[in-house]
Length: 219
Length: 295
Image (cartoon, rainbow over all chains, first blue to last red):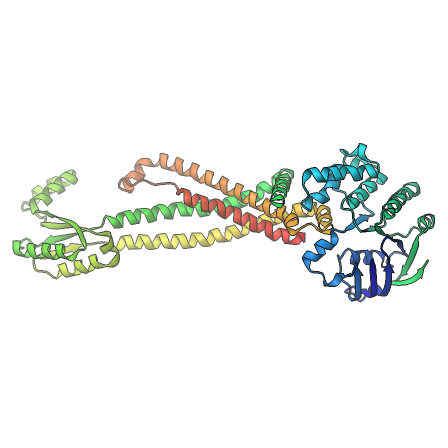
């Protein structure tokens, strides 16, 4: 599914965010990326989202080298991804259901179809009763569940999460992780970047530890 | 079509959210269009009047008091055979005196004091518009001037030429000012749209990350500029029309006297449509410039 070959990312001041990193993630796998701040976890996710290009080496997803994708191909590639951020990135002026249906809306899906699908995923994350609420009226855990619902509305083959529990207490964090495990059980490959060692221990999946842009441990 | 519909809905919502800054951008466009429109209004009317006056061009051939009927016949034969004239009228000395006394009644007493009739007989010749344009009329005038029995020929077209040239100069200078103002208006629109873009940066990031087509990402910002431009241009045309109607009503009698009955007209529908389209294009370009920061 994901193959990084001698991947490096060098920033302008001569700092390496990733250095000669090689790893593979199989289709349907659930993987944690961990390590201290500045280890390169978020950079790896940005490369996977094709927000950045590698300075050296290659990153290949489903047989496609992300560095060589043209603009149209990048759009098509991203339509198969889901993403979750620590700060949720919900649109404050839209209701819960509007936040979720926003994704198919900007991909040109007809209104009726996107409304049905939005309700389905909202029900799956257990927030159908809050569909007309605004993000500001929701708790942190609820907001992250909305973000998960938004990430799932397109049935992604790969779900990327950057510190998805960073703003949540331990109970809510576990709740979010359980949702991600369910997503993974449905066949979606899940890559979660987190520095929360306790959470990783509770979930118990393959963990790749990075430090200064290099893999220091795979457990 | 869905992208267009989405762009228009989002643009409208954004305009509603930022009424004050959007109004500011629309005013900038309106000012540019008012300058350009006022200029077009003046030059278009001036050009129209110049054309009208040019098409009714005449020249007068003043005959010497001792001119014989043969000499007059030779002049008339030259005029008739030239193909440059649309008609002619002979005005005798007596008719010229009567005409003067009628048109300048307060000066009529002067002619009594002079004794002999001081006015020469003349031939008043109407020139065909094509002969006026291609210079044949001027050539005939030169030939007539050299003929025996001719005292003078009055064919004063220089002032019309000067007026035409002044209209062209004013138009060129005004266009340059209007282009500068349009550029400033586009920059203003771009700045306002960029404010909206900044406010929606999370939304735009999400759109990029889910692989939304460029039309969905940039479309709303271009549409926003387009609407601001159209609105500004419509306001400008309304202001111009109101000022024009008021000015015409206020100075109706003065204008009629100055223009010898020829009326002033507002810009034709075609030019109004061009100005409206121009405002939309300027606004759209501003929106497009801002949208380039959206991905």
